[in-house]
Length: 335
Ligand code: NAD
Image (cartoon, rainbow, N blue to C red; front, side):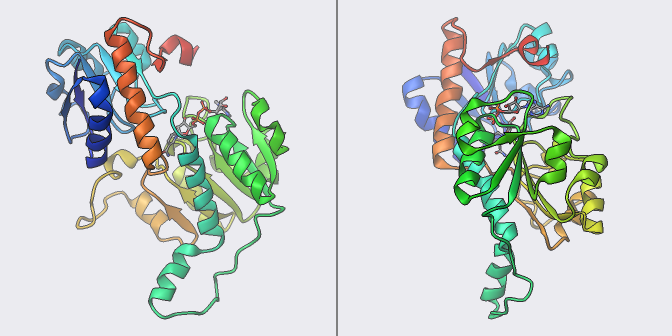
């Protein structure tokens, strides 16, 4: 099948091309992000392959449909950037990679926790400058700390296993309990109890209308003074401006982010010779207790290999007229 691949980076080309040796599709790689300005590139392609910051809303999807696109194959787990109702009305099929390597994201979340706790980012720079002072680098033991996991699906469950290994006391909040995490001695509690009791809160739920700004001023007000907040899920789970106020007041002691509400205009591009125009993002960079990575939690060889295989497998099943395993429908998700 002819597929237009948007937001292509060198690694997308590498892994999709390798997976395509067996799949045998006809891939055309486009570097631009899919937007209202670039969607004409999809003309003549029955399928497009898109990523987390591509625009798949009620403005772009009708144009794609007119250009002949029948399948949107997401090469990621999250699909909050896809208007599923609009896709359905246009008879377009949307697929995603339901699971690849939950370890990639879970391990990155824990890397953020450890780097913040032990100030590794400060120590790295200090030692390179010949400054061997320990002032300001004091951390805390993870052993015995209370960690609250919001969302105990595939990624949250792996985080639970890792943090259990560290000796953390685990709390969890989810709309459905996952029996897999029982072995980690996880205690399911209400959202407000998790917020009030946790020293570390890590978010692993999807972005939906229910979870948008899950961490807002009120939630931050309930948290322990000096708590650590980690978000490797989707930027809009937290109200960034409220988080900045909480960092300024000391209510929030540490912040580790891999995602940001307005990341589409920043992430996956080299902007090092430009002036960042996003003042909210720039303000976050000024805090000594904040680490931000640019939506890279998924970025391991294992994950990229699995993502490429599964994305092309979904397309193959669609082409054969079979039900793709990663099919997502508005009914299934929004009901
Ligand atoms: P999953 O579907 O296996 O688990 C999500 C969990 O969230 C489920 O247990 C679900 O019940 C729970 N949930 C749903 N609504 C909730 C709510 N209102 N309150 C509390 N919990 C709720 O998904 P996953 O594979 O574990 O992925 C989790 C998220 O991680 C994805 O939605 C995606 O946004 C993000 N992600 C980020 C990266 C990255 O590179 N940073 C990569 C992959 C996934």
